[in-house]
Amino acid sequence: MCSSRLETLPDELVDLIMQHIPDRRTLYSLCLVSKDINRIATARLYANIELEKDDFKHLRPLALLFWTSPPHREAVRSLCVRHAYGGNLDPWPQHPQLDAIIRKNLELYVRRGDREQWFNEVRDGADSTRIASLLLRSLPHVVTMQLPGFELVDPAARR
Image (cartoon, helix red, strand yellow):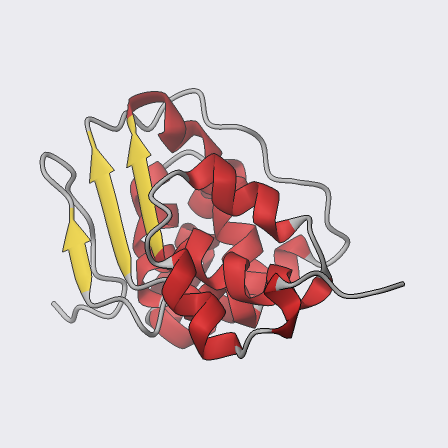
């Protein structure tokens, strides 16, 4: 099978071209073109995460994706949560290691004495703020956050 013309360009040039694609649907479509294009387009697609109003319901699947996929997690540069409501979250996706993944994040970011309470609230989804707080702590390359009207708890804060 012959390569598309886009795939013959250097990665840096393809990335520069993709910088000028503001439409997330187009970036998503580019992810489906080929493995090489997917690698570059995925980084662009996940660089700026915006959760507004009803988008916030995807918090659990998004958290699991970032906790289990280093390339996705490391692509995030900015996170914006506007007018979000923590109710009616989508359920956690089926994953055989879900509890272990949550516990691993708790070990990294939450004091030992608070971990069990945090685990129960994160796992059961009783507190979307705790899920969002853990998620933010696990995104190593975020340089910009916009969280108007959304109160977060720093899991590492000491009393």
